[in-house]
Length: 199
Picture (cartoon, helix red, strand yellow):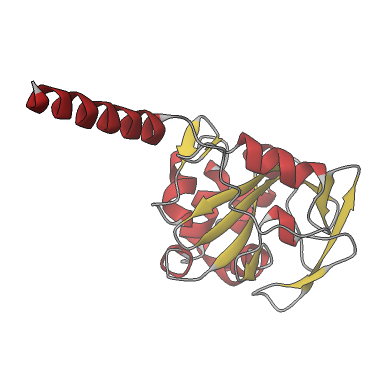
C-alpha cells in the first residue's frame, strides 16, 4: 500500500513537471531591449517570430541555416539569390560573419529601369554587381531593436546607409523594411522593398 502511494506521488510530480515543460512559454525576444529600439516594428517583428523562425516568401527562415541557405528557400528574393551567385558572394555570405543583410525582394528589383538586372548579371559587370550587393551588407548582427532613427551604418561596400524610424516603420535610405529580424546562423536579414544603390 505504501509503495503504491509513493508511486502515485512520484507519478503526480512527473506529470506536473511534464505539464510545466510542455506549456507554452512566453515568447523569447531575441532582439536586444533598448528604449531606442522599442518601436512598433521591432515589437511586431519579435512577437510575430515563432520559436522556429520567420516566414519569408512562403518558406520558414530558420536560425540553423545561414543567410544564403535561408534566402534560397524563399520565393520572393530569387533575383537577389541569383545576383549573389553571379557576383561570387555565396561563400562570403555563407561564412561565419556575422552580417546584417538588407535583402531587396523580387518586386524591388522589378522597380529598376528595364534591362538593369539582366545587364548587372552579365559576367563583365560582376564588379559593379558586387559593389551594389555589398552596399546591402553591414558587418555585425543588427536586429530591429538596434536600428534607431538618424543612425548611420557603414556597409561592407564602404559607403553609409541612413536609418529612419517613423511611426514604427523602419526605413533604410528610403527603402521600407517589410520583414525584420530574419535570424540565420551567421547574422540577420531585413527584407526591404527597394534596391539600395551606392553613389
